[in-house]
Each structure stands twice: as C-alpha cells, then as structure tokens.
Image 1: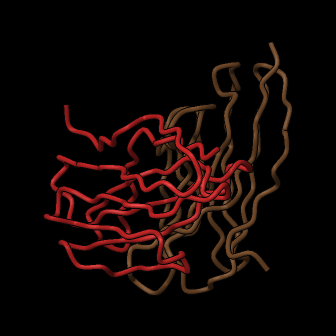
Image 2: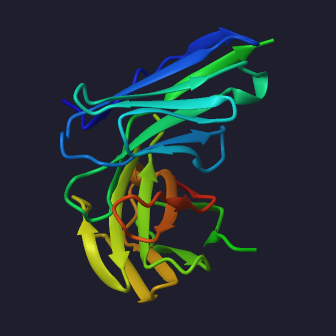
Image 3: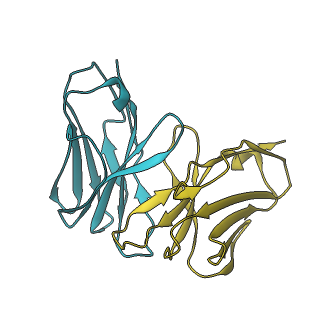
Length: 112
Length: 113
C-alpha cells in the first residue's frame, strides 16, 4: 500500500462546477496535511493546509479531513479553466523529521 | 524577493559526467530538502538537512551527495550520471516543525543522454 494515494485522473469538470479531489494515507499518526497545485513545468505551490478533523475553507477551496478514515479531500467551487493543473496531496509522517510524503497527484481539467 | 532559488534551471549532460545543483533560501528556515520528481510527476524525498545536519537520507544511490555549508544553502552533487537520473529535482525549505509546509524552488530539469 502506498503511503499517500490519489487517483491520478484526469478528472474533467465543466467550468463553474465543483471539482472534488480525494486522498487517503496510511500513517495513522499523521497530524498535518497539505494540498499543493502544480502547473505543467512549474514547481508545487501550497494552496491549503489542514490539521484538525472537519472542513477548512479559503476562498473557492475547501479542505476536508477525516483522521478516523485516514482521508483528506479538496473541493474547488466554481471551477475555472485556470484551475487546470495537477493537485498533490501531501502528509507529514509521524516520525517528526519534517518529511512530507506526496501522493502521485490528480490531474484536473476544467473545460470552458 | 524572499524565495527558494536553485540553479541551473536546465541541465543537459552525458552519461558518466558529474554535475551539481545549487539551492539557496532566504526565508530564514532551518530545514532544507531535495525532492526528485519523475516523469509520472511523483515527488519523492531524497535528503533533508536541519541546520546543516543530515536528518533524512532516503534510499538514494551514493552517487548523490548533498552538502549544506550553512542553513541557507543545500547543494546536490551527482557523480557518474545515469540515464535513470533524468528527472526534475526540487529544492525546498521549511521551518522544520511538524505542521510546517514546504516551500519549493523552481526546479532543475536534468536530462542525461
């Protein structure tokens, strides 16, 4: 089992729709979770962090965390073509070395 | 500008050569990392340094040798380059606490021919 798993996609949604990106992780002791966005040929860019169970909203983005199910998700409301990118889920391992473990990323395509 | 900067942006070289990638951060972070991103976009940690001390060394061939002269710099030297080393290498930094995110440099695309 991979430490952090994501569906590689592509996930295709029409402009204005809600995009739902999912991620599961194996280390039950993990405490911090991040979503990064990576445009083609660019570096990963942090868009959301979440540390507690529940929802965290920032503009059009909502991160959801369920530690019991070892599940974290990202919702993007009113999706825009500019949201088309690869979204990387990242989890801090419980070893406290600062090591961030990434999933393989989900490619999102928002069609006008 | 405050940032993580790495050079060069592109590196094309032949098998068997030795090359280095440099990284510098002016964010005041204590921890720096090297990640490798393969053709399938999978980001995998290679090394991490905290205040010049090596704290993470994943299963990486010893042809790869990181060096941290101070906490703001982390360089990566690669000996005897192989075709399979072709990838994008990202430098990153963080404050090193458990909840801190990583801030990435722009990446170095290494192509070994």
